[in-house]
Image 1 (cartoon, rainbow, N blue to C red):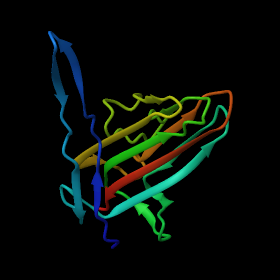
Image 2: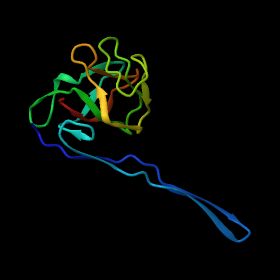
Image 3: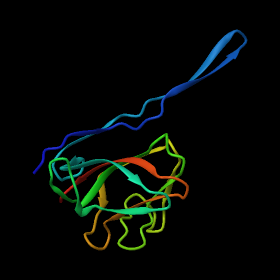
Image 4: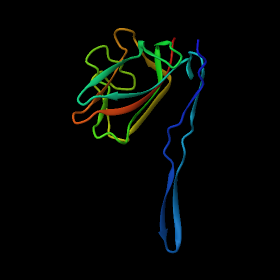
Length: 166
C-alpha cells in the first residue's frame, strides 16, 4: 500500500475596510483551517492519490473511472472505495468551459445531490471539495466522474484526487 499524507488548503481570507470620520473600520475575513489527511483508510485518512493534466478536444468529454482504470504516478491502478478530496482546475488559457459531473451511466455522485448534477468551470476556475469520511465509489455502477468540454476549442485541466481503497 502506498503511504499518502496530504493537506487540503481551501480558504478565502482578507478584510473589508471602510473609512469613517477619520477612522478605519475593518471587518476581517478569517482564514479557514487546513485539513490534514493521514495515511490509511479510515475517516481522515487516504491511501490513494492521483494527479493528472488532461486535454479534451472541442465538444468532447471523458469519464474518469475511479475504480479500476486510472493509473497513479507509481504505475498502480486506482481502485477507490471512496474519494475524500477532489481538486479540479481549468487552465486560464482555455477559451471554453468545462462541465464536471453528470455521467450518463454509472455516475460517481460524490459531492453532488444526484447523478445529473454538474458544476461548470470557466477558464481559470478551480473547485476544491473534500469530505474526511469520503464519498462512496461503487465499482462498475457508481465510479465515473465525467468531465466535458464545450464546443469551440480544446481545453486543458488538472485533476487531483485523494481517496481510500477501503
